[in-house]
Every structure is written in C-alpha cells, then in structure tokens.
Length: 625
Ligand code: DMJ
Image 1: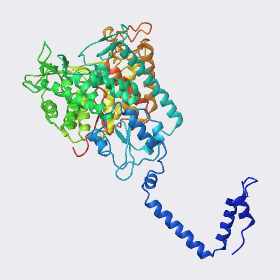
Image 2: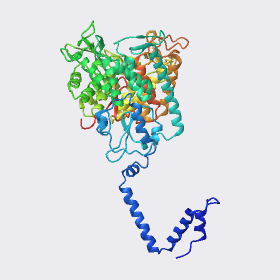
Image 3: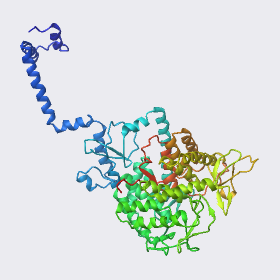
Image 4: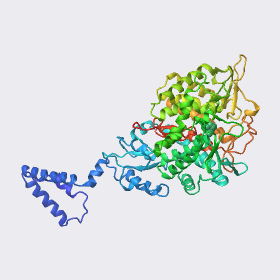
C-alpha cells in the first residue's frame, strides 16, 4: 500500500473555498485513506459488486430501458413532439378508437401496413417539416419510432441526405414560401368574397356557383395540408364538418364532382386520418351512383345528388370518353375503404367495355361514347386534349394504383403510346419542337391544347414504373414544347390552345388564334415539370416553373385577394382579366408548384401515391389487396 500522492490529495481540495475545512472535507480524506489501505483484491471485489448492482438496477428500470432504446432521445424534440401534436390537433382530429386501445396509429388502413422497419435516426427532419402534417409519432413493435408525415412513413436519414446541400435547401425554402404566400393570397380572396361557394370572382369581389358545394374549398383541402397551412386548413375542416351537405337538389357533373369533390375528400382523409372526410366521401360517392343506371352501363354525365336521378346532356345521349374513363381511381379507392364493391364494379365495367370497343386507332380513342348502346360516336377524330386526355392518364394510373397487376390496362396504355407516336407526333419549325397534334379523318392538325401538357408527366411516371425508357425521352421533348408555349407568349403564360408551324420557312413555332388566347390558370405544364424534376433532378425544370409562377404573379394576381383567369396572354399591357379563379388553381396548380420546388422526394412519394387528374393523391393499394 502506498501513501496518497501529493497529486491525489491536491485534487480533492481544488476549488474549495478558503474556509472549507469542515467535517465533509475531513470525511472525504478519511474515506480515501481507508480505500488506499485496502488490498488490491479487496478493492477489485468491491468494484465488481458495485458494477453488478448497477447493471441489475438498470435492467429492472423501465424508464431507463425506454430511454436507451430511444437512442437517448427521451428529452429531445420527439417526445415533446408527440405531446405537441396531440394538443395541436385536438381541435381538428377526433380521437380515434385505435388510439384509446393503444394501437399503433390512427389513419386509413392502407397506411398502417407501411409502418414497418423504418428507423428513426434523429429529430433533424422535424425542423424541416411543413407544419401540420407531422401528426403522429408512435412506437413500432420492436421499439422503433416511425415518423408519419403526409400520411406516410419516411426514412429520416435518407431524406436528410437528399436535403443535405444547405444552399439548395435555402433556395427551395424561399420558393416554397413563395408558393405558400401565393396560396394565402388566393385563399384570402376566397375567404373574403366567396367563402363556402364554388369559385371566387376576384375582380368583382363576389363568387360564382357551379354545383353550390364549396368546390374551391374542397379542392384546396389537401393542398393546405401539404403546404402546412394549419389555420386555413382548420377553418376549412370546420366548414366541411358543419356546413357541407350533399343533401341538395342540385345537378352535378359526374366527372367533375368525382375528381374534385370525391377525390379531394379521399386524399384529405388519407393525409389526415380524419374520419369526417371519409364520411363525406362515402356520402357523395353513393349519391353519384345513379349515373350508372343506363342501358349500356356507360354512365350519364349529370346527376341530381338530392333526387337520385341522372341524365345525359339535353342535346345528346352521349357521354365524353375522358369523363367516363377518369373516375376509376376514386371509385376504386372508395370500394377499398368501405369494403363495398359496388363502386369499383360500376367503374370497371366501363373500362371493360372500352377495352374491347371497335373504333380506336392504334389505341387512340374517339371523344364520345353513347350511353344507350355503349359504342363510340363521332368516330375518326383523335386528340390528347379536351374530352380524351385523362383516358390515357387513368389507364396508367389505375395500373399503378392496383399494384401493376391489371394487364388490360397496361396493354391499352402501351398501345396508346405507340398510337400517339405513330399518328400524332410532329416537329415544329424553326426550333424542331416535338408536339402532339390532332387527327381528323386521317389529317393531322398541328393544334395542341394546353391540356395535352399532362402527357409528359404521365409518360415520365410510366417510365419510372418500369415502362420503356423511350417514354421518358418523349416526355423530355414534350415538356420542352409545353414550356415554349409559355416562353413564346408576351406575358410568359401559355394560351389555352396553340397551333404549331410545321412548314419550311416559318420564323416562329407557335401561333395562337384570337379565340384561344386565354389562360385559365391551368396546371398541366407545372404538373409535368414536377414529375420531370422528381425523376431527373434536372434543375432546369424547377427554373422553368419558377418563371411561370412569377408570371402568374405578374399578370393574374388581384391586389384585393385571389388570382384571375385572363383573356389575352399576348398583351402584357392589358391581359384582360376574366374575373374567375378556377378551383383547380388551388387544388392543382399551386400544389404542383410546391411539389416541384420541394427537394424532399418523400413528400407524396410517387411510389406510394398516384395523383388523380385533379392532383389529389390516392394511395397505391397494398400488396395483399
Ligand atoms: C382539371 O379539372 C383536371 O386537371 C382535368 O383533368 C382537366 N381540366 C382541369 C385542369 O385544367
């Protein structure tokens, strides 16, 4: 045994005040001396016993185990976060029975089985989040804590790596904020002058009704959720819960009310888990069903949702092909959620019939179908624009939604893309832009609706899901053309319809007829820019979108609130406002801007969701269904 070294002794007294010569100090010195007097074996035995006690103590303390399994995060943002969320959302989200029973999470069934083995590595991304969407944090069955965002589980580590460049994040954030600001401005106009009505008329500070069902408010719900606009969302949610009633003697268009109202309610239900939206979706879905009571089972265009009657337009017994083939995503999802197959059976009967109909040209469909005999009418005219557009979009998206199992949908889609390539594609002069024209009885017209600009996004989505790579190449060419439809206009905003020049010696690619010079704040080009950016990460697509957003702000923004359609994209001095803000500006255009500028690929993952044709994300069905 050796005496305490000078150093050991000094260390005990360091920091003591001058008067610190009390019993405590004496006791310490005495203990230390006794310790030093013990043999090495005695000291080892004591240390071993202490260690053993410590380990046993930890093993029997649930609090500490919990703390360690959490990676020591018990005191950081995550646990506080759970509490915050519960408090914050009390007003919005009803307490779900599953929470009371201690189940893993609230929310629609499809999303529960995605709570798998994702590891919660840190609280980093919580700071990057978009507001009200971080709604629940639960323990996984193996002690993991998946983060549920936008109704889905994300891997934070992966997402953080994707977002690692600070300058990229700063640019993205400023653009995202610009979209939020644009949304707030549009919403202010709607709130001040059109609350609860279908559409804002921002110039006259009034509103217009189409169905009298609060169309803009419903179309905008999931956009607010995605943009993180909590207060606006909460107010709108209250309106849906307390004011929205479908028990009304009103005529609605089957397609428009399906994509905007049913689609909007279903996607908001998926993002929030709030059953009020599902209840409303079931109600409107059921009220639309009389449309299918036709001799052919091809639905009528119009339904009286109060009376339960349906009919075609007054002048014809035809329905529009795009309309009857672009309601499937929504009704299929409604069947899945309710367990009632009648919705799905009705819409799939339409697809079954259209699949085997004569009158297509290399997979391209005419624009009209008769509700009595189920045959195409007005044959020989093929367009990718109005009345046919979303037929093609929904072939692909139904195939994705259903887990890529429905072969007929894929066959029809692939055949249609070949039909487009064979029959509709041409090049402009002088720039050699690729465009999709219209075929009329064998003659190609170089006319293209702005609506056709959905196509690059759809082609890119197909390529992402394993379809031929040349679809992506065509997508890239077509989106360039759509961008040029903006760039070549004096306001930098696209007209509704363009005619391309194809003859030698033309000096400009794009011509616009006087009647086609309007811009309705449509989303298709921004939508396709979003898909192209997600899949290629080519910054030019974001830049193009940024230019377009600035031009919307320059020529369509109304100072007292809202944005307006304009009559003349060729006159920057007087674009001539039309005094109407379409609901799809909030439902689609601003949402796609936001998604385009976001660097987070898990923000509505394109592997987990398909967007309906009104930009409402619906989940891809889980494998087992
Ligand atoms: C929207 O209602 C939908 O995108 C539809 O498919 C086409 N028209 C408008 C937007 O332009």
